[in-house]
Length: 94
Length: 130
Image 1 (cartoon, rainbow over the protein chains, first blue to last red):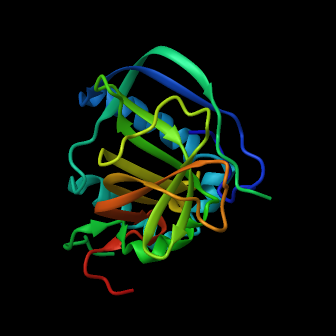
Image 2: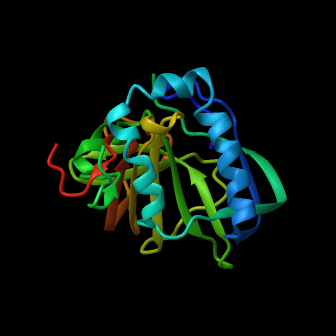
């Protein structure tokens, strides 16, 4: 979906691109670690990410949550794109 | 700080993400096409009491047929602890446009079989009442 801000403007949306392809579930640690590092750089090691750590009370639960396997084994879903298209998005009436 | 001995969960009661049903968050409807190919269409969501309504544009490439299994996913947030979502798995049923939303959209009601909601800002030990 589009890279929208946390609080969306209901009358204007960024364009959406739908990518269709073949998905492969990767569970090998080398791949999952690579993407975890990339996610940390993008979503945590940035000004917005640092500011989000005002949730210190929840942050202390992160190691237990990710280490518990509650949602199953960590994986990366790789999509080999075959087709991409802009998709019309329905708009909230003004 | 001691090591947590109870499982940690992000799951919340769907009531806690009720605001996501009011049409401002990202939303998409997932289902399979006639040839079995998985697809997803962006939708506008609307709430009508307990009913989950999803509106597709006239330009939508695909639509689920009545009775078909679908998954409606509504989510918001960019940063980790802002991530909140509602996932409703169920069956599609044609619906009329809700009063407060787009009458130019094709509306579908998702009759739920399973509803899950999560909020990473509520990450906590399970059975934690707070």
